[in-house]
Length: 135
Image 1 (tube, rainbow, N blue to C red):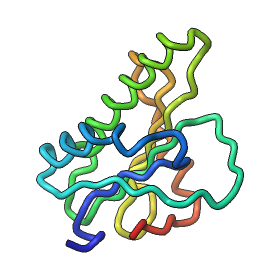
Image 2 (image 1 turned 90 degrees about the vertical axis):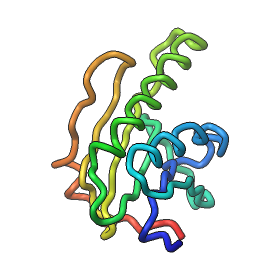
Image 3 (image 1 turned 30 degrees about the vertical axis):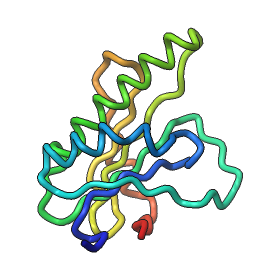
Image 4 (image 1 turned 90 degrees about the horizontal axis):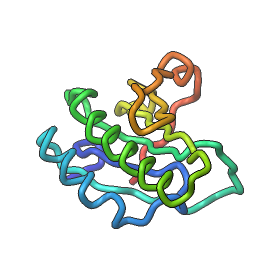
């Protein structure tokens, strides 16, 4: 299986997540799309500070964005709720970007609470340069 034929979940900051955090999410996405799904963690290359918890999702040609996005939104809301219970101050918003095979955003949303609708940021993200797909 090549990376071009699978869905890849990649955290923007490898220290925001453990591999185990993604286990149920990977299974849910694979069940929803019928496409093999895995997590990829890049080595941290710089000291990046983000006000967001970032998740990039690579999908191959022909996979419906909504089928991949809905389980990730559910996952992000659950993490948001859990973090808010553990730390009453406002948790960081969650940024989710679905990328196509060319590394360009197909859909980008921000989740600012566990119950509000995601904020669509697709047009803003499309101005960014393409992102290299993990191996």
